[in-house]
Image (tube, rainbow, N blue to C red; front, side, top):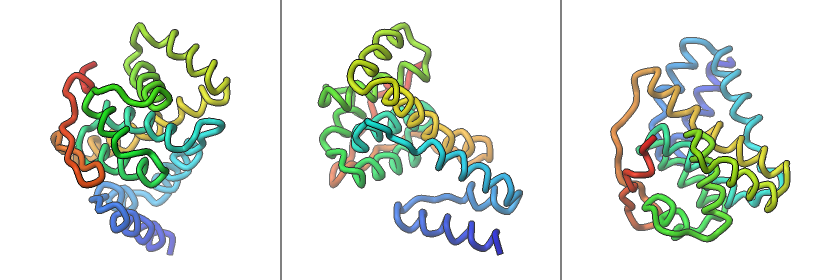
Length: 181
């Protein structure tokens, strides 16, 4: 019964976001316990605290981008749009153009955090000034959660090459510099 429910939940996500989640179906078949734990972990990290959801999702896009610039960035983008992030903001972030300050800060913080870059301390201070310690935690959870899907997907042999990301009605070429470690 649990396996049936998990597969149904995954199919609903696939339909809603036009996303191939074969790897999640395979994880469910391998171990329903592992899939339940994965889902619980992901749900626990979906907390935005004082950070507006539209901005929080920008940090999630950065997390997905560092692990995969294909379908996982697409679904992160679609979720961000669903949370109210403007398409032009996402397009700017993905192409490396300047974006609104809050979105840019969230995106830059997430990238710096995951890359362990020299800019992390300054960005951390900026995040705390802007949203407080809870905001820092929230903007840490977003890229952590976002990168889990592409890591699991790659581990299960389902990683894809980079692709253009559809943002609204436009296709955006991801700036390759943003993928660099």
